Amino acid sequence: MLTALRDAAQPLFVVERKRGVAVFDLFDMPVHCELSALNCLEHLALSSILLTWAERDAADAAAGHVDGWSVVAGSLPLVVASGTTLSSNPDPYADFFDSALFGDGEPCCAPSR
Image (cartoon, rainbow, N blue to C red; front, side, top):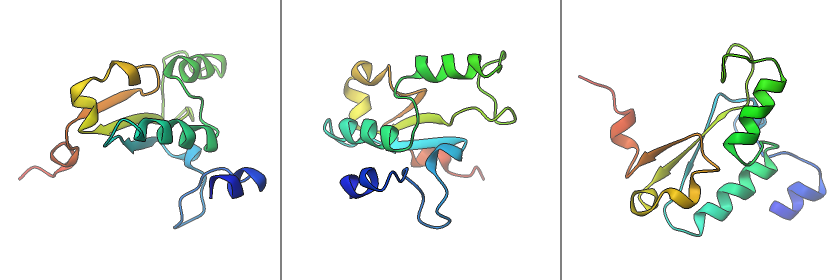
């Protein structure tokens, strides 16, 4: 599938509306094993999202977003990693993700009662 997307010059998109991943405000990627990190980088590249947070930050600054990341200003999506692998050693992934949820992310997103 990756080869087919590259050959067609088709960026990675969501199935429901065929919108490119780069138009969203947040891009969350699960890292459940060490090899998943390589898939995350591949997904960023296919989505036309810059690989490192420093590159994304510099692109936002170059676009005139002087206050940093902003939904209103149309910044690139925040790239968030989640999963149990990050709990053991997040340092190798630090350059690629804007934020991380350690362990399982479900408790972070559960509604409060």
